Image (spheres, rainbow, N blue to C red):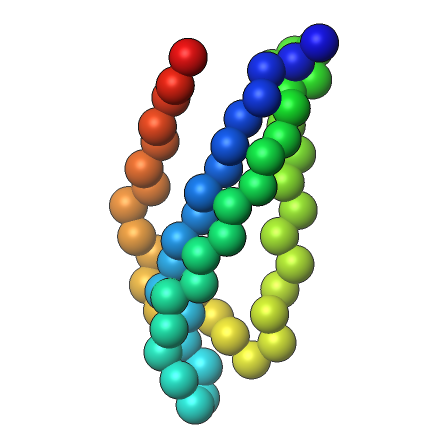
Length: 60
């Protein structure tokens, strides 16, 4: 049995037509090693505007 994890991801995106912030969240359960997998598919014609500092929030 794993641990329930909530992932919140926000990033600035830039395309030829617009700049915007994309936000999504997901709930995952870790496996027996404490790992989880999250697949993020690409969005056509959108790229990260700049890499930001990563924030990690741990709650027990």
